Image (cartoon, each protein chain N blue to C red):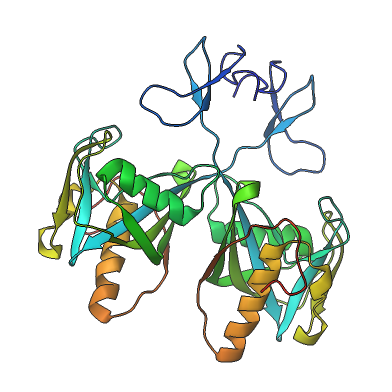
Length: 184
Length: 184
């Protein structure tokens, strides 16, 4: 941030009075421009036991696989964001059923919140941000080619819970940018 | 938003190519300024079964009661944010133990995430954003004077779970700005 979004003046970086960390502050109109983490809403969606996966048509991680996920928008709930992303990326209508995982991705200034979901119909396809969409059996999940560690984490917990017949809410902090095949 | 925070030019509101909703876009440097919901991290903290409550020294809802909660900062996890707010508002060191509630507050463009916590010691006090801090028995919680409905929701679910001997994760969407004494 270089300029004040309210008045256009050049901002300064300083600790405002009564605060304890540096913010961008406008010396002209005195607005403090707070910067905070963003929520990424995602969905592990299933149809007849298979998981809905998309191959990314965009950077970062072009060509790698992910569950539908993206930045939550103003005016929606987290669950609505997860369902919207599933529609936009996988052209699938989904009903979210429970919170699956909350993943702090501190280095990226993001919190990833994943829901479990069930597709409303068998229909799916590739949205504009996807090269390809597939319904994949657990045995066929391409663990070495998953785009982000938070997605690996969410899918592993999903499958473990399903095998155990439970639906827990899982939390973790991801400290690595790259997924590892043994990232559990 | 009126001016581009990158170059200082006046922004326009329009739907960017490949997008489906209006954004603030800079006609000079082409940056798209996305605006997304903020996370509020809060903590229902207990000490010997009593709940830690603060009376707000700031607007909105000056003088009303709340559990420690505030905007999550970059560089921390949600749980760390909840603990930091407990320190700043109630001068209490707390260990967060589990996720209690995820509350979509769509009209405010916020998601409130509450943790359960246990104070590390019996010490507490009033931080600069609090008029007063108290440890309150369940029977003495001032339900009619709680600052925000998300706080009422989190405390009610906390107490119900405690009575039942469980620790579930609860979700809801709050559509009202004002708490109601029967808001459950």
